[in-house]
Length: 298
Image (tube, rainbow, N blue to C red; front, side):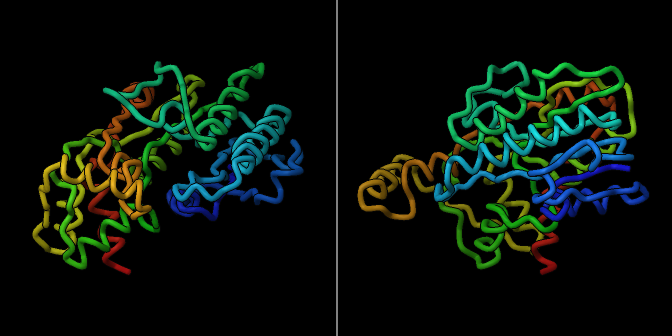
């Protein structure tokens, strides 16, 4: 049996569908606060998906991140250590390592998160790594980058709505590359870790193989509805001037938002690919096409 926390979330619903044929048991958020090893009776593996997501609007209480992402993870991992379960899979985030990246992020990068979200995830990682691991048990700390797929309600959905309405993308003059992660590729890796006993415990970044520019993404989303991508290459200097004006006048486009929209963030997936020795089921472009098709089907 596999026990899963956060089974009703975006990743959880996709994972449950992907793990058909396995006996699954859901752990509710309220159960985590009082979890014990008896709750994990008969479980062979524990997958910890539940957590407080990164709040881009910055209205969350900072302590909530530590309570949910650290304290509840600590309680669940303690219960795992006392149980008969053999594997613990924790879904962390690349933001536990870095909020911005120069070059390519790897697992060897010294973590330096700046947000409460990233810091709380890193605290949970360090707690897991700091406990003596009994014989026969393994832990896997997975650091996914931006996850997308059917049921996704994040920035990709918002960008798709702009494309669907024929609104040109005005930041095409900026050159960037970002790593994405199809939820199917994440589920594939989790399933491999459940089935196999030859992958060493540790931290693994999870990303699709190819990094893409935002212009590439606009093109893929446009292709999904047979539209020609509308890309406005307004001079970046002019856009930055407008963003600085937005800082002063509290307009929607600020310097911080512009940086988030146009920054590069490339995460290597070579460590996990070497560990499992298999190709991921979906290419970056195919995964985004699947996500776009799910938007169009709504």
